[in-house]
Length: 140
Image (cartoon, rainbow, N blue to C red; front, top):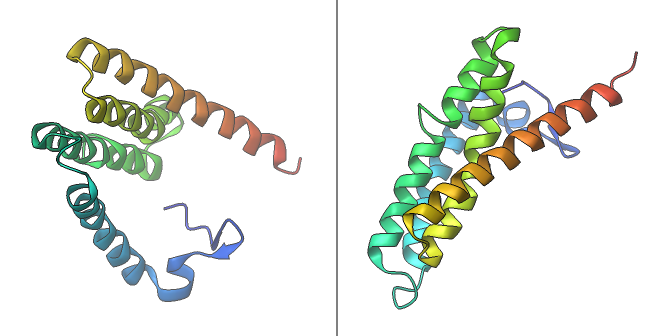
């Protein structure tokens, strides 16, 4: 989304294949994740009801009120949107990881809420540290 021509030393998909193909590749990856969860989670270890909650949590976190909203604000928002961007792009995703782990393990609702707050805080902290490191690495 930031139009960088490379990621981790490799050319970005949009630089190699074009923006249209990069968007299609991203669109194709989302359902593969859900398919993997459903087809590779042993039903004798994780009941279907928990699996459905995990899928719903992931969909919420990446959707229009989660990471996608943060990405939109990152592209269109101004300097006053930084906190909300960090919360949505990074806080939502770390929250999702913590909550899904708890859901899979059979955590109770009060434990899920604590995991939700913990994950969001870790994600925002990551974003802040990453921004500081980026600023320190930029030439004067």
